[in-house]
Image: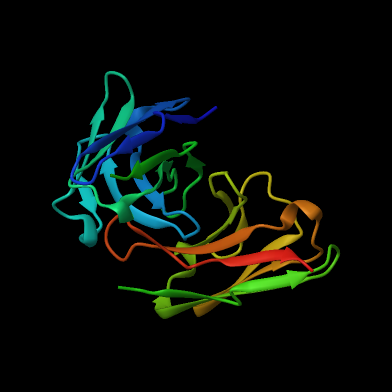
Amino acid sequence: QVQLVQSGAEVKKPGASVKVSCKASGYTFTSYGISWVRQAPGQGLEWMGWISAYNGNTNYAQKLQGRVTMTTDTSTSTAYMELRSLRSDDTAVYYCALAVAGTAVDYWGQGTLVTVSS
Amino acid sequence: EIVLTQSPGTLSLSPGERATLSCRASQSVSSSYLAWYQQKPGQAPRLLIYGASSRATGIPDRFSGSGSGTDFTLTISRLEPEDFAVYYCQQYGSSPYSFTFGPGTKVDIK
């Protein structure tokens, strides 16, 4: 069965960086891309970007361009999302997500809480 | 960029009642690219409906989706206690492999 298992919660200071991992299993990793979605406390869902696990192509949300980098390690079937220059409004639960058919997310990671606080 | 608006913001109903949730897009959306999710506190979202009207695997038939163009609806025919949650609509493809989510509708117990 498909599983996406994310790394644990992080606490960071403003201006720092965070790197969240998402280990995939139960399918051929390079067959699909991985999306990242975040959710601030009490707020809705925000798409952050997508990376192809096949060739590393990316598409980032415009508001995060320049601060976010998504990568994959095909040897370990793991996707990574790095966010730099953290601000308090980056405090959120970060999800990795898999859309097998491409148009809707079938599988979600368990979420990683990133808290940005001085 | 397509903006999704959901109404109402909160829907207060009793178990057994019918819930009708609306999702409106700022411009026409392909039905193939409209999905609905359920999210409970502390959990990741769960896919309910894709392609505007197709139920995802394991989703009970009390959940149904309809609509086209700019107006889409999620209907829960008879609310069960486990259905009280937040529901999001989602559109695919403003840019390649991108998703846009609506702000959500909370269905709570009256």
